Image (cartoon, rainbow, N blue to C red; front, side, top):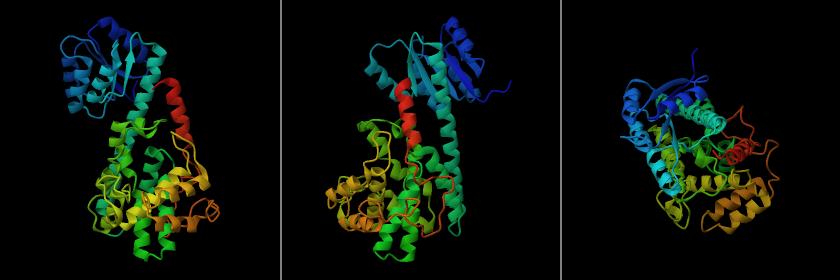
Amino acid sequence: MIFRHKILLVDDEPANLRLLQRVLGRDYEILSAQSGTAALDILKQSKVSLIISDQRMPGLTGVQLLQQSLALDPDAIRILLTGYTDIQALIDAINTGQIYKYVQKPWDAEDLKLTVKRALEAYELRSSNLKLIKDLQSALAKLENISIGTITALANALDAKCDYTSGHSLRVSRYALAIGRVLGFADDQLKDLELAGILHDIGKIGVPESILWKPGRLNDEEQKIMAMHPLKSVQMIGDIEQFERVKLWVKHHHEHLDGSGYPDRLTGKEIPIGARIVLVADAYDAMTSDRPYRMSIGFERATSELRKFAGKQFDPEFVEALLSAVGENGEHLSSNGIPESFLGLQLGSIDPLQSGKQHLVEAARLRQTGL
């Protein structure tokens, strides 16, 4: 039988290895090791999708093994089996080893199988996303003229797979474009506004799903990770001459007028004009869409919030331009819920009115299962 995934089991107790193999061996190819050193030797020869290690072992502990395994197989998902009682110490150790989840002993066979299934889904998603990044970078690197179809298809796939609201990038690009139209921007600026909106969040593909789908507010460490996504977006766009202005707008689309934004804490007119526009468009879509941590607040409240923070976070001119284009309650929007495209971009597999329902379901599932 050919298995889709290979799992490395590590435990110094042979009986424990046999039990794990009985639970998982019917569905996956199993490799096993009775020490951390032996496990590292296996990883030098074989690539695996998942490593499951006991924590308390002679020589290398489970956390030490999983930490060292990063150099040999950085893409593998890591699960730790532990009887730890000091949860904070455990969490600190897990962070150093980039561990997907810890499972407390004694573990339940069905719960473990579900955890493994979800871990391998995360592995497949990450692998798919990495391929999409390479495809996007390759396509951009080969462009002599901007291939709108290629960019659209790849951004569409990235948005559907890794952003927490399907259609988000499409809607942001159209709201940004609507602002530019109200202000009478030239065609080249409108083109770049639409592209910046489509590409502004592709860096989120490098943000762990546990952060993107978190049903609550992010902690300080998670905020730092999330704040890296504009820089990652710029890296993915690459060094194409035609995209220099687009990259600048993407990089600074989370800067605030009062200097409280990121990544460079720019203020006022230091922030590129397109970045200030994308920020307003991004915030408007965030407030009028369902998110893992809250439901849409609706058009009326979104309008109130934009005006409340105009002059502090948002450029007041661009807030009023957006509201002029979409209406105080979204009444000027087209039948599909978004302004018209300038470049003729159509994301066929994305329903622009779908606002994160599947991710709300995923967040509920994670809360229920404790994953």
